[in-house]
Image 1 (tube, rainbow, N blue to C red):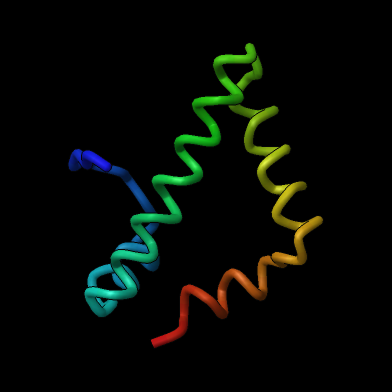
Image 2 (image 1 turned 120 degrees about the vertical axis):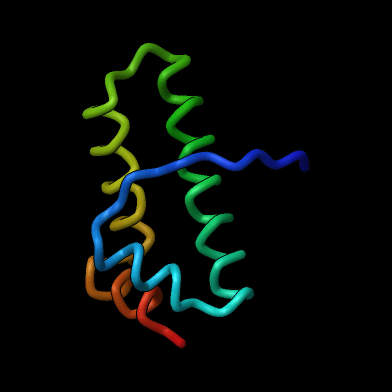
Length: 78
């Protein structure tokens, strides 16, 4: 898959976590962000607003068992 570098504004905590992550952790985080952006693009093509997309992504993640706490744990793993 072809990749392209983008600038993405995130919270200071998220930036610090990313900057201190190992190369493998960074690769996983980049894959996660890329996946979510592709999913959001598919929803936009169907005419959904960004708010609707974000709500659906959150709902889907929760239905699959991903809680905010679990996400924090995943992102905090080192």
